[in-house]
Amino acid sequence: MSPLGWHRDSSSLLIEMAMPLLHEGARVVDYGCGTGGSAIELLKACDARGLGIELMLVDPLPSWFHKAHSLLADRPDVRLELSLRTDADGRRLFRTLDEMLDGEHVDLIVCSSTFHLIPAKVLDALLKEMAGVLLPGGSLVWSSGDIAHPSRPSSRALLHDPYRMVRARLRGEEARLAALDLLDEQARTRCERAADAIFPEPPDVSIMLNAVEGAGMSSRIATEQIEMSLDDAERFILVPRLSDVAAPLDSGEQRDQLIRSALEASFTAMREGGKADDDVYRIHWTFGVHELA
Ligand SMILES: C[S@@+](CC[C@H](N)C(=O)[O-])C[C@H]1O[C@@H](n2cnc3c(N)ncnc32)[C@H](O)[C@@H]1O
View 1 (cartoon, protein in one colour):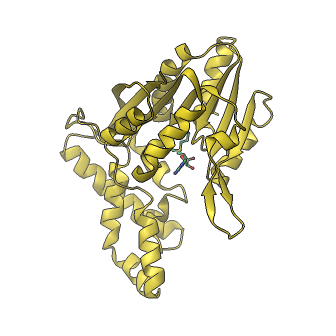
View 2 (tube, rainbow, N blue to C red):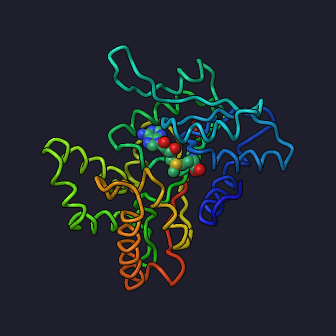
């Protein structure tokens, strides 16, 4: 599997930061493994150096997780854990890292492109949970293209800015409003909430740093410019789960076309604002390395 340019560029910087923290036999968690993109890049880097690690992949979303499973389950050094479970009353609950690791501790937690999707109100608890499974001197290494950082220059956007603009444009779009009108009020509210939640407002890096400090870890933060091609951006938002920003319109060519033209209008605004060129938009990507004292 060959990663897209923006994913390759952001992952390779993250892995550069992670590699010096690894040793033969190191135990590693990839938190928010998705379809396995970051884990595959990490394993490639370890394989290239002849470094053996034990990697546990964790994700709450069964559909993405199954893709990672089909790509990586054959490797004896990889273990996969679905982090959502349903209790006896049918409620969906997150399993803790301690539970998934069965009391074991790890040298490194990698969290690639995931922290911006985790609600701010659970970050304090999650960072403490992460610190709780790290060995003394163990580290958390993360990156995200959608975290607001005060150093962001006006020439760079955040990863999800164009897609938030698409959602804003589609909010008043006629065909979508007509489809919403066919729903009862409760279904309409549910549908709008779910569509708004696909690209939430970016959290501020200070929330992350406070949570890290509260968990007793040190902080090293870096930012880099990562470029995403406009073609990749279009493919990204047309993934079925993300193109639900146009819900309740049914998936299909008409919906894709509405999304494409809203995206084109967003890019025009980004070009005018100096954040995009003809073929790419620029993203202010944040990286964090935190060591447990
Ligand atoms: C953009 S993907 C990143 C995948 C992979 N780490 C990579 O970089 O290739 C983000 C992942 O975060 C997971 N995720 C979303 N919300 C989460 C939450 N509240 N807690 C943990 N993981 C979450 C999603 O299921 C998704 O697989």
